[in-house]
Amino acid sequence: MAITKIRRIGIVAKTGVTEANKLASNFIDIFLAMKRDVIAVAPLTHKLVETLPLDNIDGKVDIIVVIGGDGTILRTMRVLESSTPILAVKMGGRGVMSEIEPNDLQNIAVKIIEGSYFIDRRMRLVTNISSKTLPPALNEVFIRRAPPTGTPTYTISLGKLTIQQRMDELIISTPTGSTGHSFSIGSPIISEDLNVFLLTPISPISKLPPLILSPEPIEITSNSPSHIIVDGQLEAYLEAGVPVKISKHMFDAFFIRFNNNILRQLIKLGFN
Image 1 (cartoon, rainbow, N blue to C red):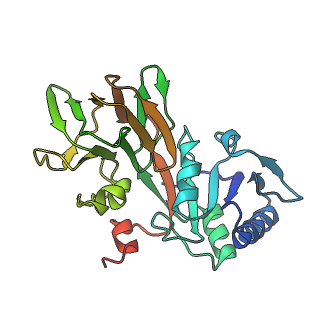
Image 2 (cartoon, rainbow, N blue to C red):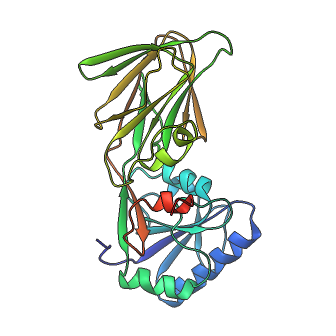
């Protein structure tokens, strides 16, 4: 699946990295030469195009080119309530979610305009605490105990099944996030095209294993105050006894890809 016509393109560059800004400026020049409208996302600027803040870009462009590492991708995805596709250009870091290296910009731009690409669709998570909705998570929601002492008891409601378990913390991951924090503590890697949740307990008293679940809402309550961390970048405080609800976000994340590989993140981690 490709977008019928790409008329307006947003460009995001990793903040504070000179090389990323240069690459972004080159991309802007190329797209302008191809008679496309371009918006630079602040703090990126270009004398020939409009600049908008990141939180005002959703719905104003057909695609977004993100030049940076996984952190820049996550930051961009978090402000997108819609399914605006992202082309991820690696610039620094491991670039597990990135599609391309910054080498042949002209050829990449031509492929985008011609529609010579695939759409890689990824599920996201949305977290609700009482009446507050947190920005969507592409990777995971991490529930971390607030007090450094004592082991909290978590009550986990999975539809008709309720699990009570003493453990330090827990992670609810998407398949995209299964190669991240949860994998580092022994959870499985899940094919990115699946619509499932991965619930990973951290130091459970009764050795509760990781659970792969259908994407139905999960409600979690702790008898101790907690911190809710979205994609390792956004934090919210959770009072003891207040339930947090984690559900599948109504809009998936879309990535522009030039090949149809599966388990691409596994390959990026060097397991091929």
